[in-house]
Image (cartoon, rainbow over all chains, first blue to last red; front, side):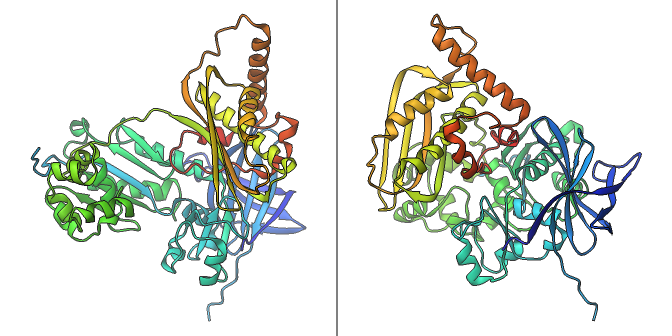
Length: 94
Length: 418
């Protein structure tokens, strides 16, 4: 039914900031450390702002090529949270 | 009245996001692309699909189908709960793109809008609208997401532009004017036309009109006197010929909330917290629109299938949560209490411009108003429903804010939720 796994865990993130480009590519979470594993993101699928009260939150929906991750950056607390994970499937080329 | 088909140059563009919510989810989740998915407000056994992806539609899933019905067709169907900020972002991005082309942009709902190009001819120096349509499509892909697709329709009025947008879904771009209008009508059924559902179809059939071409050829008199029995008939006569009749701004007539109960019950302990929460969210909408109400209408649906309602008009306009709840509860307590409720709702009507800035000579009234304003300000700062009545606590957890379907006027309010 709903394949989303909710985590809500703080994570370490390395993000990339570009000096120019359109808003969809200016800031990109490059990789994340979660449970001692390094996950490198290959695509920023959607980024959208939202708010929790007056706190500005940037939501990044990213993919590592297989799984989808929802990361939230709290612009006031400067924290990254892995909110949810959507498991994909490896597809063999054969 | 005897009108020719309008020979005006088509200058209205209708833009429609394909399966908006489902496509936005597929944009955000790469692993869901190409899969049959749906979106609902709250996942439960009886929830229904409010948006389905094209893959799901191709397999027979229709908007409004219940999850258990869908799972009979597609056992591994994926259903997600709505994410209003995500859709708001898509909506705002689409708005921004559209407003780059004309100052006259009207968003009809969260996933569709109209650009009126009248008066911009000099600026575009004869550039065809089909060319601009292609550019907008490209910008949507680039600026919102590579998976996002839109239908673009161009016509001489809003009706034809919308029809054109739906002609070749998904990802279509069509123009309807006097040159191909009859071709379009020949290819479609009456119920394919926006605004003609089974009820109007039956009326048209009774007057011997069975196809859109016959509808087009019917006289103004026939439509007004025989079919619609009102000026609506004349509107249709002009609309079908490409003349603009739909460029009107509607006035806010009422505000309200309704809720299908998560637990069917006749017990006040279950019903009243939810009812109070509905009253408080309705009060928020009222104050958000800066109006006061004089009328209250409450209703309930029972397990027996019966529908009950009662309404009352008051001399004095009101807007505080306490007033709304007190007036609504007085009416709601008149319901047949032994019957099990399945759904209920409240609507405030007879709206008038707010007099909130004017102080009352009665201190008690002022205190109530100041309290309401203070609560609204705190909620505005920290997110909606940070402060609310203790009685509505259970209601807050159970009654979810819904995605507005028709208009977009409450979107900002919805997003302020904590």
